[in-house]
Length: 381
Image (cartoon, rainbow, N blue to C red; front, side, top):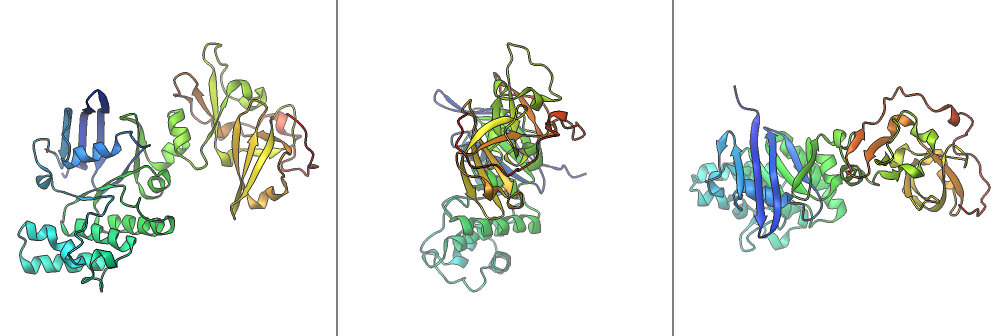
């Protein structure tokens, strides 16, 4: 039976002088899976990719590809292809010559080489551009040439190091769809480095979120979004990010279903922007002042500041008539207990999952109408 694991990392560590870049990374990537290495700059994701590729040597640990320990092997013998951020195209060679270059170096027969290049041109939509030089191509076309070069290599594993960061936002979106479609069509195993959580959420089967050289959390995009293990995950995944509110700022009525907190262990209550409900100011809700409203078409972002200086972003559907809100207007904020995440404020670790969706709403909310017509006054908190 074929081993479903394409890449296996065990105890992988790497340091640059006194700075430890990778800290005992254990990771398995399944065959045919699109895995995104996600995290802020300096978290170690590109170094991890380069260690897998053989471009850097780990200080400790092992790298296995298709069940074979490749630690002693050079990059050319690791049975993988790589797509770089800079495209790495030869400016004096045509599109077809750039795509075929690796095959020529490996002395692949001419007939086979031409067949593979023709297939890659068709798959990547570059037919008709074979004779052009890179300078005559758009950014998206150059990236497709780099992808085609990876495809003709015929390797089942492809490593991508922030390949879309040089493209503008609109083009980045279209090329992102092309890469995902190609990966599915060819059944390749892809490990994709990015600092853009939108890319990772939209493309990956699995996200490995890194922080300080360690894996903070690994799972499907839905798992990281719905069940973040730490405040780092909660604030990094999601746009706008989750609001993390100190326990002292949260009215008792909004802590329904959460256990009592020991005095020495205060908590943070996490709520996603779309899970806030705006209502009239009252005793059992958080109060705040609207500091701005951003119209985004199908939705709006409402910026609210509480008396404790907690800054909250509320995402609201336009059907909720949020255009009626004005700056400096006093509002109430609440949420259903089923959507609240609880974290230990000292460790940042998840204390409890979002409560059961069957958790009843607090009776205190019953008399508060959602989105009432409020006179535009300028009260203070």
